[in-house]
Amino acid sequence: MSSSNQITVWGVGTTRTFRVHWMLHELGVDYLTERIESRTGETVTPEYSMVNPKQKIPAFAHNDFVLSESFAIMRYARNEFGGLPYDEFQTSSEGRAR
Image (cartoon, rainbow, N blue to C red; front, side):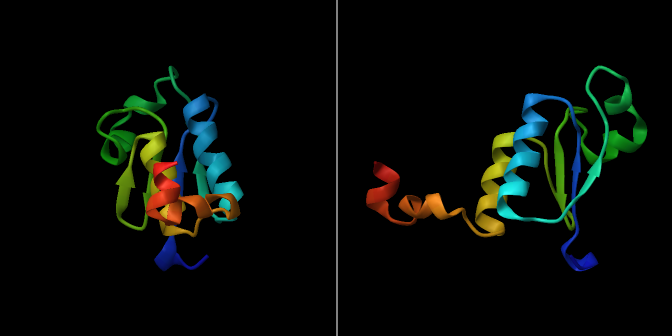
């Protein structure tokens, strides 16, 4: 992946971080992992606070765009990096309603 399409995920070891890593894996997206864990003090460092002022994991950056809620990250990734084959039902009004 070129540096103009850089993706970084901060966080490991929780259900919310796992779902983001899983989604990116399913989509076949290359990304960097910054291994920080909850309840270790790593989320309250000044460096991480600049990434995510909420001081929670996961955090996700695509170039300069940053998200910090796992569901929002997954939704963004599906839309930005191509959906999954079983997402086809979401491409129509009828499918979304079902």
